[in-house]
Length: 465
Image (tube, rainbow, N blue to C red; front, side):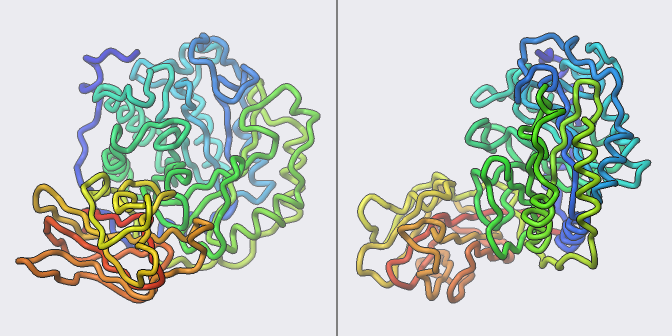
Protein backbone atom coordinates (compact mmCIF):
# COMPACT_ATOMS: atom_id res chain seq x y z
CA UNK A 1 0.00 0.00 0.00
CA UNK A 2 1.10 3.56 -0.73
CA UNK A 3 1.96 5.36 2.52
CA UNK A 4 -0.79 7.88 3.30
CA UNK A 5 1.73 10.61 4.15
CA UNK A 6 3.00 10.52 0.56
CA UNK A 7 -0.42 10.74 -1.04
CA UNK A 8 -1.19 14.42 -0.82
CA UNK A 9 2.44 15.46 -1.24
CA UNK A 10 2.62 13.86 -4.70
CA UNK A 11 -0.94 14.54 -5.82
CA UNK A 12 -0.95 17.39 -8.35
CA UNK A 13 -2.66 20.71 -7.78
CA UNK A 14 -5.02 21.26 -10.70
CA UNK A 15 -7.59 23.81 -11.78
CA UNK A 16 -11.18 22.93 -10.89
CA UNK A 17 -13.95 23.29 -13.42
CA UNK A 18 -11.78 23.38 -16.55
CA UNK A 19 -13.97 24.62 -19.41
CA UNK A 20 -13.32 22.89 -22.74
CA UNK A 21 -14.02 24.66 -26.03
CA UNK A 22 -16.79 22.58 -27.68
CA UNK A 23 -15.52 23.34 -31.18
CA UNK A 24 -11.98 22.28 -30.27
CA UNK A 25 -13.29 19.08 -28.67
CA UNK A 26 -15.26 18.27 -31.81
CA UNK A 27 -12.12 18.76 -33.91
CA UNK A 28 -10.17 16.39 -31.63
CA UNK A 29 -12.95 13.81 -31.86
CA UNK A 30 -13.02 14.15 -35.63
CA UNK A 31 -9.24 13.73 -35.82
CA UNK A 32 -9.54 10.59 -33.71
CA UNK A 33 -12.11 9.14 -36.10
CA UNK A 34 -9.80 9.89 -39.03
CA UNK A 35 -7.39 7.34 -37.50
CA UNK A 36 -10.05 4.65 -38.17
CA UNK A 37 -8.20 1.57 -36.94
CA UNK A 38 -6.05 1.03 -33.87
CA UNK A 39 -4.14 -1.64 -31.97
CA UNK A 40 -4.84 -2.50 -28.34
CA UNK A 41 -1.83 -4.07 -26.62
CA UNK A 42 -2.57 -6.01 -23.44
CA UNK A 43 0.77 -6.75 -21.77
CA UNK A 44 1.05 -7.01 -18.01
CA UNK A 45 1.34 -9.53 -15.17
CA UNK A 46 -1.57 -11.56 -16.56
CA UNK A 47 0.58 -12.33 -19.64
CA UNK A 48 2.64 -14.62 -17.39
CA UNK A 49 -0.27 -16.17 -15.48
CA UNK A 50 -2.55 -17.76 -18.10
CA UNK A 51 -5.44 -15.56 -16.93
CA UNK A 52 -7.19 -12.27 -17.74
CA UNK A 53 -6.63 -10.45 -14.43
CA UNK A 54 -3.24 -10.70 -12.77
CA UNK A 55 -3.07 -12.10 -9.25
CA UNK A 56 -2.28 -9.10 -7.01
CA UNK A 57 -0.52 -11.37 -4.52
CA UNK A 58 2.13 -12.58 -6.94
CA UNK A 59 5.64 -11.14 -7.00
CA UNK A 60 6.48 -8.56 -9.71
CA UNK A 61 9.51 -10.77 -10.44
CA UNK A 62 7.18 -12.91 -12.57
CA UNK A 63 7.07 -10.13 -15.18
CA UNK A 64 9.91 -10.77 -17.65
CA UNK A 65 9.32 -10.00 -21.35
CA UNK A 66 13.03 -10.50 -21.95
CA UNK A 67 12.98 -9.81 -25.69
CA UNK A 68 10.50 -6.92 -25.59
CA UNK A 69 10.17 -5.51 -29.12
CA UNK A 70 7.72 -2.60 -29.46
CA UNK A 71 9.28 -1.84 -32.85
CA UNK A 72 7.93 -5.19 -34.04
CA UNK A 73 4.48 -4.25 -32.69
CA UNK A 74 4.61 -0.94 -34.56
CA UNK A 75 5.66 -2.60 -37.84
CA UNK A 76 2.79 -5.05 -37.51
CA UNK A 77 0.34 -2.23 -36.80
CA UNK A 78 1.55 -0.34 -39.87
CA UNK A 79 1.21 -3.45 -42.01
CA UNK A 80 -2.48 -3.66 -41.08
CA UNK A 81 -3.08 0.01 -41.92
CA UNK A 82 -3.59 1.04 -38.30
CA UNK A 83 -3.22 4.67 -37.27
CA UNK A 84 -2.71 4.42 -33.51
CA UNK A 85 -2.23 2.10 -30.56
CA UNK A 86 -3.00 1.83 -26.85
CA UNK A 87 -0.94 0.03 -24.19
CA UNK A 88 -2.22 -1.27 -20.84
CA UNK A 89 0.03 0.78 -18.56
CA UNK A 90 -1.76 -0.60 -15.48
CA UNK A 91 -4.39 -3.34 -15.48
CA UNK A 92 -6.78 -4.28 -12.69
CA UNK A 93 -4.22 -6.03 -10.47
CA UNK A 94 -2.28 -2.74 -10.20
CA UNK A 95 1.16 -3.54 -11.67
CA UNK A 96 2.63 -0.51 -13.47
CA UNK A 97 4.57 -0.80 -16.73
CA UNK A 98 6.50 2.38 -15.94
CA UNK A 99 8.85 3.26 -13.05
CA UNK A 100 6.23 5.04 -10.97
CA UNK A 101 7.41 7.05 -7.96
CA UNK A 102 4.19 6.37 -6.07
CA UNK A 103 5.37 3.12 -4.48
CA UNK A 104 3.08 0.82 -6.49
CA UNK A 105 4.49 -2.43 -7.84
CA UNK A 106 6.18 -1.66 -11.13
CA UNK A 107 8.68 -2.77 -13.75
CA UNK A 108 11.69 -1.72 -11.70
CA UNK A 109 10.86 -4.47 -9.19
CA UNK A 110 10.38 -7.05 -11.95
CA UNK A 111 12.78 -9.36 -13.77
CA UNK A 112 12.69 -6.83 -16.62
CA UNK A 113 13.62 -3.54 -14.90
CA UNK A 114 13.02 -1.21 -17.86
CA UNK A 115 10.40 1.36 -18.72
CA UNK A 116 7.96 -0.47 -21.01
CA UNK A 117 5.78 2.60 -21.53
CA UNK A 118 8.79 4.58 -22.75
CA UNK A 119 9.81 1.83 -25.16
CA UNK A 120 6.27 1.67 -26.53
CA UNK A 121 5.69 5.39 -27.07
CA UNK A 122 9.10 5.88 -28.66
CA UNK A 123 8.67 2.97 -31.09
CA UNK A 124 5.18 3.93 -32.20
CA UNK A 125 5.96 7.60 -32.63
CA UNK A 126 9.05 6.70 -34.66
CA UNK A 127 6.77 4.63 -36.91
CA UNK A 128 4.45 7.62 -37.38
CA UNK A 129 1.62 6.19 -35.28
CA UNK A 130 -0.43 8.06 -32.68
CA UNK A 131 -0.15 7.00 -29.06
CA UNK A 132 -2.85 6.32 -26.45
CA UNK A 133 -2.51 4.87 -22.97
CA UNK A 134 -4.86 2.62 -20.97
CA UNK A 135 -5.13 2.99 -17.19
CA UNK A 136 -7.27 0.97 -14.77
CA UNK A 137 -8.91 2.82 -11.88
CA UNK A 138 -9.56 -0.52 -10.18
CA UNK A 139 -6.28 -1.47 -8.48
CA UNK A 140 -6.26 -4.64 -6.40
CA UNK A 141 -2.67 -4.25 -5.16
CA UNK A 142 -3.54 -0.86 -3.66
CA UNK A 143 -7.00 -2.06 -2.59
CA UNK A 144 -8.74 0.53 -4.74
CA UNK A 145 -12.13 -1.07 -5.22
CA UNK A 146 -15.80 -0.42 -4.48
CA UNK A 147 -16.49 1.14 -1.06
CA UNK A 148 -12.81 1.37 -0.14
CA UNK A 149 -11.92 4.60 -1.99
CA UNK A 150 -10.30 7.21 0.26
CA UNK A 151 -8.82 10.67 -0.40
CA UNK A 152 -5.35 9.08 -0.20
CA UNK A 153 -6.23 6.53 -2.88
CA UNK A 154 -7.66 9.24 -5.12
CA UNK A 155 -4.39 11.15 -4.65
CA UNK A 156 -2.45 8.04 -5.72
CA UNK A 157 -4.55 7.70 -8.87
CA UNK A 158 -3.98 11.36 -9.69
CA UNK A 159 -0.24 11.08 -9.08
CA UNK A 160 0.04 8.09 -11.42
CA UNK A 161 -2.01 9.74 -14.16
CA UNK A 162 0.15 12.84 -13.78
CA UNK A 163 3.28 10.76 -14.33
CA UNK A 164 1.82 9.30 -17.52
CA UNK A 165 0.67 12.67 -18.87
CA UNK A 166 3.86 14.55 -18.06
CA UNK A 167 6.62 12.03 -18.81
CA UNK A 168 5.59 10.47 -22.13
CA UNK A 169 4.73 13.31 -24.47
CA UNK A 170 1.38 14.24 -26.03
CA UNK A 171 -1.29 11.53 -25.95
CA UNK A 172 -4.17 11.19 -28.37
CA UNK A 173 -6.32 9.63 -25.64
CA UNK A 174 -6.22 8.30 -22.12
CA UNK A 175 -8.52 5.26 -21.96
CA UNK A 176 -9.83 4.45 -18.48
CA UNK A 177 -11.33 1.19 -17.27
CA UNK A 178 -12.45 -0.45 -14.04
CA UNK A 179 -14.59 2.54 -13.08
CA UNK A 180 -18.36 2.91 -12.84
CA UNK A 181 -18.91 -0.53 -14.37
CA UNK A 182 -21.17 -3.25 -12.99
CA UNK A 183 -18.17 -5.53 -12.42
CA UNK A 184 -15.88 -2.95 -10.76
CA UNK A 185 -18.58 -0.97 -8.91
CA UNK A 186 -16.38 2.07 -8.21
CA UNK A 187 -18.93 4.82 -8.79
CA UNK A 188 -18.49 8.39 -9.93
CA UNK A 189 -19.78 9.32 -6.50
CA UNK A 190 -16.89 7.53 -4.74
CA UNK A 191 -14.34 8.84 -7.23
CA UNK A 192 -15.75 11.93 -8.94
CA UNK A 193 -15.29 11.86 -12.69
CA UNK A 194 -14.87 15.61 -12.84
CA UNK A 195 -11.74 15.50 -10.65
CA UNK A 196 -9.97 13.22 -13.12
CA UNK A 197 -11.35 15.17 -16.09
CA UNK A 198 -9.99 18.44 -14.71
CA UNK A 199 -6.61 16.82 -14.08
CA UNK A 200 -6.29 15.44 -17.61
CA UNK A 201 -7.48 18.63 -19.31
CA UNK A 202 -5.14 20.72 -17.14
CA UNK A 203 -2.11 18.61 -18.03
CA UNK A 204 -2.92 17.90 -21.69
CA UNK A 205 -5.85 19.94 -23.06
CA UNK A 206 -5.75 18.05 -26.37
CA UNK A 207 -5.87 14.59 -24.79
CA UNK A 208 -9.24 12.88 -25.16
CA UNK A 209 -10.47 11.26 -21.95
CA UNK A 210 -12.58 8.17 -22.41
CA UNK A 211 -14.03 5.66 -19.97
CA UNK A 212 -15.40 2.15 -20.54
CA UNK A 213 -18.81 2.99 -19.07
CA UNK A 214 -21.22 1.88 -21.81
CA UNK A 215 -22.66 -0.72 -19.45
CA UNK A 216 -23.83 2.03 -17.10
CA UNK A 217 -24.59 4.62 -19.79
CA UNK A 218 -25.88 2.72 -22.82
CA UNK A 219 -26.91 4.41 -26.04
CA UNK A 220 -25.69 7.17 -28.27
CA UNK A 221 -24.68 9.91 -25.84
CA UNK A 222 -21.42 11.08 -24.29
CA UNK A 223 -21.91 10.70 -20.56
CA UNK A 224 -18.55 11.00 -18.78
CA UNK A 225 -16.44 10.26 -21.84
CA UNK A 226 -15.11 12.17 -24.85
CA UNK A 227 -15.31 9.03 -27.01
CA UNK A 228 -18.03 6.41 -26.53
CA UNK A 229 -16.41 3.06 -25.75
CA UNK A 230 -17.98 -0.26 -26.72
CA UNK A 231 -16.37 -3.48 -25.52
CA UNK A 232 -17.40 -5.56 -28.50
CA UNK A 233 -15.64 -8.57 -26.96
CA UNK A 234 -18.15 -8.36 -24.06
CA UNK A 235 -21.17 -8.12 -26.33
CA UNK A 236 -21.59 -4.34 -26.45
CA UNK A 237 -22.79 -3.22 -29.88
CA UNK A 238 -22.86 0.14 -31.60
CA UNK A 239 -26.44 1.25 -32.29
CA UNK A 240 -27.19 1.99 -35.94
CA UNK A 241 -26.93 5.60 -37.07
CA UNK A 242 -24.91 6.60 -34.04
CA UNK A 243 -24.10 10.34 -34.12
CA UNK A 244 -21.39 10.27 -31.44
CA UNK A 245 -17.66 9.54 -31.88
CA UNK A 246 -17.06 5.99 -30.73
CA UNK A 247 -14.55 3.17 -30.47
CA UNK A 248 -15.28 -0.56 -30.46
CA UNK A 249 -12.73 -2.92 -28.96
CA UNK A 250 -12.26 -6.61 -29.60
CA UNK A 251 -9.49 -9.18 -29.91
CA UNK A 252 -7.54 -10.86 -32.69
CA UNK A 253 -6.95 -13.84 -30.42
CA UNK A 254 -9.59 -15.36 -28.13
CA UNK A 255 -8.86 -13.17 -25.06
CA UNK A 256 -7.11 -9.95 -24.14
CA UNK A 257 -3.93 -11.38 -22.59
CA UNK A 258 -1.62 -13.95 -24.18
CA UNK A 259 -2.18 -17.68 -23.57
CA UNK A 260 0.14 -20.58 -24.28
CA UNK A 261 -2.14 -21.93 -27.02
CA UNK A 262 -2.05 -18.71 -29.04
CA UNK A 263 0.87 -19.47 -31.41
CA UNK A 264 -1.20 -22.17 -33.12
CA UNK A 265 -4.73 -20.98 -32.22
CA UNK A 266 -7.39 -19.88 -34.66
CA UNK A 267 -7.49 -16.09 -35.07
CA UNK A 268 -10.26 -13.80 -36.20
CA UNK A 269 -10.23 -13.82 -39.99
CA UNK A 270 -9.06 -10.83 -41.99
CA UNK A 271 -12.37 -10.87 -43.87
CA UNK A 272 -14.39 -10.69 -40.64
CA UNK A 273 -12.21 -7.92 -39.23
CA UNK A 274 -12.43 -5.80 -42.37
CA UNK A 275 -15.90 -6.47 -43.75
CA UNK A 276 -17.92 -7.15 -40.59
CA UNK A 277 -16.19 -4.81 -38.17
CA UNK A 278 -13.85 -2.17 -39.55
CA UNK A 279 -15.74 -0.91 -42.58
CA UNK A 280 -19.24 -0.82 -41.00
CA UNK A 281 -17.90 0.79 -37.83
CA UNK A 282 -16.05 3.50 -39.73
CA UNK A 283 -19.29 4.27 -41.59
CA UNK A 284 -21.00 4.74 -38.20
CA UNK A 285 -18.60 7.26 -36.62
CA UNK A 286 -16.68 4.50 -34.88
CA UNK A 287 -13.08 3.28 -34.83
CA UNK A 288 -12.10 -0.35 -34.42
CA UNK A 289 -9.37 -1.08 -31.89
CA UNK A 290 -8.12 -4.64 -32.27
CA UNK A 291 -6.20 -6.23 -29.42
CA UNK A 292 -3.04 -8.17 -30.27
CA UNK A 293 -1.49 -9.83 -27.22
CA UNK A 294 2.31 -9.94 -26.99
CA UNK A 295 3.75 -13.25 -25.80
CA UNK A 296 5.98 -13.78 -22.76
CA UNK A 297 9.02 -12.70 -24.76
CA UNK A 298 7.35 -9.35 -25.41
CA UNK A 299 6.83 -10.06 -29.10
CA UNK A 300 3.87 -10.88 -31.31
CA UNK A 301 3.50 -14.50 -32.39
CA UNK A 302 4.15 -15.25 -36.06
CA UNK A 303 0.53 -16.09 -36.79
CA UNK A 304 -0.61 -12.71 -35.41
CA UNK A 305 1.96 -10.83 -37.49
CA UNK A 306 0.86 -12.70 -40.61
CA UNK A 307 -2.82 -12.00 -39.97
CA UNK A 308 -2.19 -8.28 -39.49
CA UNK A 309 -0.37 -8.14 -42.81
CA UNK A 310 -3.30 -9.95 -44.43
CA UNK A 311 -5.67 -7.32 -43.05
CA UNK A 312 -3.51 -4.63 -44.61
CA UNK A 313 -3.70 -6.30 -48.01
CA UNK A 314 -7.50 -6.53 -47.76
CA UNK A 315 -8.21 -3.04 -46.40
CA UNK A 316 -7.01 0.30 -47.66
CA UNK A 317 -8.56 3.42 -46.11
CA UNK A 318 -9.90 5.82 -48.70
CA UNK A 319 -11.34 9.30 -48.47
CA UNK A 320 -12.42 11.10 -45.33
CA UNK A 321 -14.65 9.63 -42.68
CA UNK A 322 -18.08 11.16 -42.19
CA UNK A 323 -18.05 14.47 -40.34
CA UNK A 324 -19.56 14.49 -36.86
CA UNK A 325 -21.63 17.29 -35.44
CA UNK A 326 -20.77 18.87 -32.13
CA UNK A 327 -22.08 16.64 -29.31
CA UNK A 328 -23.01 17.58 -25.75
CA UNK A 329 -20.57 15.95 -23.34
CA UNK A 330 -21.68 15.44 -19.74
CA UNK A 331 -18.82 15.69 -17.22
CA UNK A 332 -20.51 16.77 -13.98
CA UNK A 333 -22.79 14.91 -11.54
CA UNK A 334 -26.53 14.73 -12.19
CA UNK A 335 -27.88 17.24 -9.67
CA UNK A 336 -31.33 15.60 -9.71
CA UNK A 337 -30.16 12.04 -9.09
CA UNK A 338 -31.63 10.64 -5.90
CA UNK A 339 -33.64 13.77 -5.08
CA UNK A 340 -37.32 13.66 -4.00
CA UNK A 341 -39.58 13.44 -7.04
CA UNK A 342 -43.27 13.88 -7.84
CA UNK A 343 -45.49 13.15 -10.84
CA UNK A 344 -48.91 14.15 -12.12
CA UNK A 345 -49.83 10.44 -12.08
CA UNK A 346 -47.95 7.18 -12.55
CA UNK A 347 -48.65 3.67 -13.75
CA UNK A 348 -48.40 0.91 -11.18
CA UNK A 349 -44.99 0.47 -9.50
CA UNK A 350 -43.22 2.94 -11.81
CA UNK A 351 -43.08 6.15 -9.81
CA UNK A 352 -41.22 9.35 -10.66
CA UNK A 353 -38.18 8.38 -8.56
CA UNK A 354 -37.23 6.04 -11.42
CA UNK A 355 -36.60 9.05 -13.67
CA UNK A 356 -34.10 10.45 -11.17
CA UNK A 357 -32.14 7.32 -10.15
CA UNK A 358 -29.17 7.57 -12.59
CA UNK A 359 -30.21 4.19 -13.99
CA UNK A 360 -30.91 3.97 -17.71
CA UNK A 361 -32.72 0.65 -17.36
CA UNK A 362 -35.59 1.91 -15.20
CA UNK A 363 -38.25 4.48 -16.05
CA UNK A 364 -41.28 6.45 -14.93
CA UNK A 365 -44.46 5.81 -16.91
CA UNK A 366 -47.54 8.05 -16.96
CA UNK A 367 -50.74 6.46 -15.79
CA UNK A 368 -52.70 4.29 -18.20
CA UNK A 369 -54.88 6.18 -20.63
CA UNK A 370 -53.07 9.46 -20.05
CA UNK A 371 -51.90 11.54 -22.99
CA UNK A 372 -49.87 14.01 -20.96
CA UNK A 373 -48.16 14.25 -17.61
CA UNK A 374 -45.28 15.74 -15.69
CA UNK A 375 -42.48 14.75 -13.36
CA UNK A 376 -40.85 17.10 -10.91
CA UNK A 377 -37.70 17.21 -8.80
CA UNK A 378 -37.47 19.38 -5.70
CA UNK A 379 -34.27 20.59 -4.08
CA UNK A 380 -33.74 21.59 -0.46
CA UNK A 381 -31.98 24.72 -1.66
CA UNK A 382 -32.08 26.76 -4.84
CA UNK A 383 -29.87 24.89 -7.33
CA UNK A 384 -28.13 26.25 -10.42
CA UNK A 385 -27.91 24.27 -13.67
CA UNK A 386 -27.27 24.99 -17.33
CA UNK A 387 -27.88 21.65 -19.06
CA UNK A 388 -30.69 19.10 -19.07
CA UNK A 389 -30.96 15.64 -20.59
CA UNK A 390 -34.23 13.93 -21.46
CA UNK A 391 -34.17 10.21 -22.22
CA UNK A 392 -37.17 8.08 -23.12
CA UNK A 393 -37.08 4.31 -22.44
CA UNK A 394 -36.95 3.48 -26.15
CA UNK A 395 -34.54 0.60 -25.55
CA UNK A 396 -37.17 -1.17 -23.44
CA UNK A 397 -39.12 -3.78 -25.45
CA UNK A 398 -42.36 -3.13 -23.56
CA UNK A 399 -42.17 0.61 -24.21
CA UNK A 400 -41.17 0.29 -27.87
CA UNK A 401 -38.45 1.78 -30.06
CA UNK A 402 -40.57 4.65 -31.37
CA UNK A 403 -41.01 7.78 -29.30
CA UNK A 404 -44.37 8.21 -27.61
CA UNK A 405 -43.75 11.90 -26.93
CA UNK A 406 -45.17 14.51 -29.30
CA UNK A 407 -44.25 17.58 -27.25
CA UNK A 408 -42.32 18.43 -24.09
CA UNK A 409 -41.39 21.43 -21.92
CA UNK A 410 -38.78 21.93 -19.21
CA UNK A 411 -40.10 24.32 -16.60
CA UNK A 412 -38.90 25.96 -13.38
CA UNK A 413 -41.03 27.43 -10.62
CA UNK A 414 -40.53 31.19 -10.56
CA UNK A 415 -42.47 33.23 -8.03
CA UNK A 416 -45.30 30.72 -7.79
CA UNK A 417 -45.72 30.22 -11.54
CA UNK A 418 -44.11 27.79 -13.97
CA UNK A 419 -41.74 29.27 -16.55
CA UNK A 420 -40.60 27.40 -19.67
CA UNK A 421 -36.84 27.24 -20.22
CA UNK A 422 -36.64 24.60 -22.99
CA UNK A 423 -38.94 22.46 -25.07
CA UNK A 424 -39.72 20.87 -28.38
CA UNK A 425 -41.72 18.28 -30.28
CA UNK A 426 -40.64 14.64 -30.44
CA UNK A 427 -37.30 14.44 -28.62
CA UNK A 428 -34.18 12.76 -29.91
CA UNK A 429 -33.30 9.42 -28.27
CA UNK A 430 -30.91 11.44 -26.08
CA UNK A 431 -32.24 14.98 -26.00
CA UNK A 432 -29.99 17.68 -24.51
CA UNK A 433 -30.62 21.37 -23.96
CA UNK A 434 -27.95 23.91 -22.98
CA UNK A 435 -28.80 27.41 -21.79
CA UNK A 436 -27.59 30.24 -19.58
CA UNK A 437 -27.56 29.15 -15.92
CA UNK A 438 -30.93 28.89 -14.21
CA UNK A 439 -31.46 28.70 -10.45
CA UNK A 440 -34.55 27.05 -8.97
CA UNK A 441 -35.78 24.75 -6.20
CA UNK A 442 -38.44 23.03 -8.31
CA UNK A 443 -37.90 21.78 -11.87
CA UNK A 444 -40.54 20.04 -13.93
CA UNK A 445 -40.64 18.12 -17.23
CA UNK A 446 -44.05 18.16 -18.94
CA UNK A 447 -44.63 15.62 -21.71
CA UNK A 448 -47.45 14.95 -24.12
CA UNK A 449 -48.16 11.73 -26.00
CA UNK A 450 -49.55 8.21 -25.66
CA UNK A 451 -48.80 7.18 -22.05
CA UNK A 452 -45.30 8.72 -22.21
CA UNK A 453 -42.37 7.61 -20.09
CA UNK A 454 -38.97 8.96 -19.03
CA UNK A 455 -35.87 6.93 -18.23
CA UNK A 456 -33.82 9.87 -16.95
CA UNK A 457 -34.40 13.57 -16.59
CA UNK A 458 -30.94 14.89 -15.72
CA UNK A 459 -29.83 18.34 -14.57
CA UNK A 460 -26.19 19.42 -14.78
CA UNK A 461 -24.06 22.50 -14.19
CA UNK A 462 -21.33 22.15 -16.81
CA UNK A 463 -18.29 24.48 -16.87
CA UNK A 464 -18.51 26.72 -19.96
CA UNK A 465 -16.23 29.20 -21.66
